[in-house]
Figure 1 (cartoon, one colour):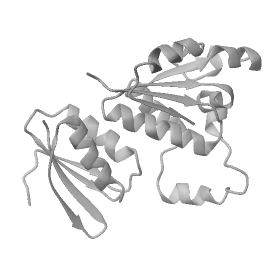
Figure 2 (cartoon, helix red, strand yellow; figure 1 turned 90 degrees about the vertical axis):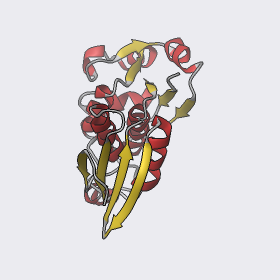
Figure 3 (cartoon, chains in turn brown, yellow; figure 1 turned 120 degrees about the vertical axis):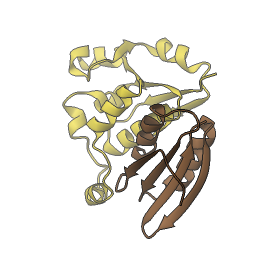
Figure 4 (cartoon, chains in turn purple, blue; figure 1 turned 180 degrees about the horizontal axis):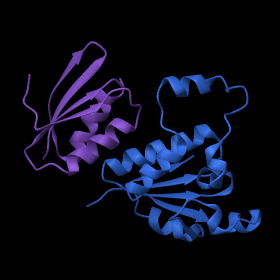
Length: 76
Length: 131
């Protein structure tokens, strides 16, 4: 388990909502802070990975917990 | 350097609406500068009344249930989101003239212009798409 500064619950939301909401949360955070994101959209794994890369953020880890995918992204 | 995504929306069905607004909001959320040129039937996507009830392709009506189950946002919601993300909407003046439509018939905040308005934005775009 990683420590997150903030948690975004995007469970049940379809593309592109998890990305749109992740961006919104990240905007309000400081460089170096970690956002934990919970999603059920199976496309989010590839999407959040690409999103983090393109924005210069670090995808620190991801885990699968039943139907829920968890991601930890550190703001770059 | 900010990346730019230029989109032409020239079809007016529900599927096209999702293709256009999903890509547009995803690009904007990835910090692209995004402009969409709405032309011909594509204008339906931003028409205040028409965009509330965009048609499914014939024979595909059964997908309505799938849309509901997948919890996909409604088109007006996606439009609001796109506007929040500063996606630029350009309505095609020529099509509006042909169809007898005024700017007021469309969602707030659109710009009305011709092909060159779009081309000016698109000429140095990193991603260019047509739907």
